[in-house]
Length: 508
Image 1 (tube, helix red, strand yellow):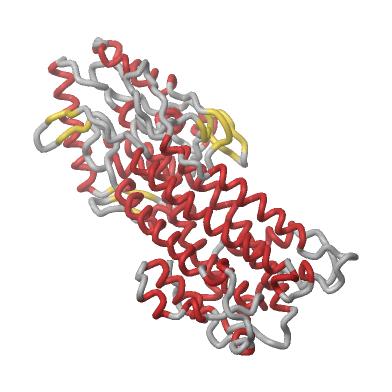
Image 2 (cartoon, rainbow, N blue to C red):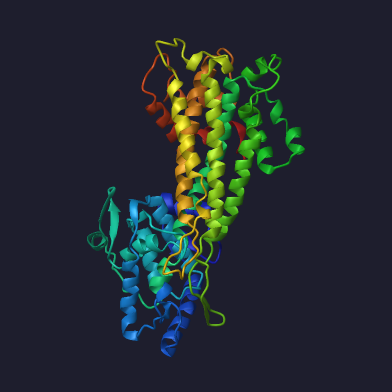
C-alpha cells in the first residue's frame, strides 16, 4: 500500500498506483492537517463574511453573496455545471494518477476539505472505480475544471464510469461495489476541481515513459550504427569533455557500452569511410539534448505533483484565506511543450537512420533490405510510415502554451493550455515509439545481411530475442504486425531490460 504522508510523492510511486493498482491510504499526521484546515472554513461560515468560493459564487460570479440555505446546492451545481468535457475518455492510468494527485494536494492541509471527502476519493482508487473523463475541455486555468468535475461527479453518484471499455451510468456500479455517494460541504466542490491534476498526471506518465524511450532510442541508434558499419570515434569520451552537456556525455557512454566488442565495427575500423552522416555521428548531441530536456521537465513535474493548486488557499497557522492563482498551469504547459520537441527530435533523427538503411546508395546493403528487389519491395514502405509519423509530430509540437483565450466573462483572461500540451506530448511519444520500432526492425534486417560478422554482445542477445517474434524477411509479407510486436517490446520495457543485462543500467 502507498501511504500519503508529509513526504513528497515520486513518479515511481505514482506509477505503481496508476498502473499496478496499488492501494492507497493516508497517515494520521495528514488527517490532522486536513482537519485543521477545515476548522477555518467552518469559522468563516459562522462569521458570514464574504470569502471567495466559500460564501460567494465562482469566477465572474464571485461578486454574488450566497445565502447559507443555498450553499449546499451551490456545491452540487458547481460540479454538474462544470461537466462539459468532450472527446475520447482519458485512459485508466491517467485517471487513477489524477485522482491520486488530487488526494495528495488536498492532503497538504491548505484546501479546507473534510477528511471523509478525501477518503471517498481514495475509495475510487481502492475499489478500482474508473470515472469516465472526456479528454478535451480544459484550458489549463483555473486548473482542469471540466475534467476534474467529471471525476468529482462520481463522488455524488452522478456521471459515468468505465466498465469493460464502455462508459455506463455511475450510480448502479457504485451500488454494486458498496460505494456510498456523498453530499459535498461548503468549499469542497471548488477544492475538488480547482487544480492542475489532469495535466500533471498526463505529464508525469509521459515523463516516466520518456525515460524508457530515451534508453531505447540509444539502443536503436546502436543497432543502426552496426547495420551501417559506422565508427565509434564520434562517441569518444574526450569529445564530450570539451562540450560537457550531461545528456551528450550520457548518450556517448550508453552507445559505447551497447556496441562494445562489436565484430562488425571492429571489422570496418580501418575502412576508407572518413565520416559518418550526421544521423549517426551526431547521435550523442541530439539524443543528449533530449535527455537534458527530460531532466528539466522532470524537475518541474516533481514540484507540481507535490504542490497545492487550489484557490483560495487556507493558511492553517494564521487562519488566513488567500485568493490566489496557484491553479494556473503555465509551469506544466511550458515544460510539456519543451518535452514535445525533445521527444519529437528522437523520432526525426531515427527516421533519417531508417532512410539511410533502406537506401542502397548510402548503406551498401541490398536495396530496401531485400535480397530480391523488384519482385519484393522489402522495407521500402515502413520508411513512409516513419516519415508520416514524424511529419505529424511536427504539427503537434506547435507550442500550446503560446495560446491563450479569455474565459468567464474576461475575469479569467489568461490561460495556459497546459492540458493540451500534455496530451500532445503523450501522442508524440506514441508516434515516436512506432518510429523507433521501425528503426529496430530495419536495423535487425541490415545486421542479418552482414553475417557472419556479429554485433556487440548486448545487441546479439537483443537480435536473438526479437527474431523469436519478428523473423528475417525473406520475401514480402504484411509488416504492420512486426512493427506492432517491436512497439510492444519497447512499451513494456523488455528491450531495455534485456540490453541492460549486458551493459548495466543505461543513462537517461
